[in-house]
Image (cartoon, rainbow, N blue to C red; front, side, top):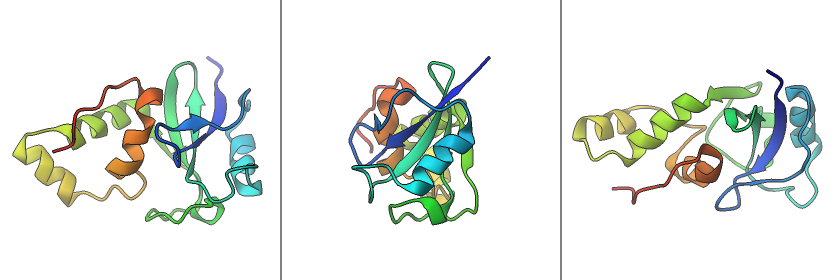
Length: 130
């Protein structure tokens, strides 16, 4: 199955794809973030891997990210869509045990404010966060 890679701007709510068509290799999308995306020079950017629909999300290397974020990694950090869906459900849970686990965990790349902006790409309807 072939994939395409697109740069997403999470400074918009919901997130938008900032160029189309996508790239054939992740390195091309990483280079686009590193080189700067016109009109998004100070925005929060991520990379989506699509085999339509979205199948994986990449948080670019911290040194290449134009936005100031809490996450810190030397290369693109990839997260499978299934984990993104689980984390979305956990953030919206009313179960006290799940909420405690969320509070105790470190989600530097994917705090609720960032993850919730991906709702269209993830195909989820958000509940009001408790």
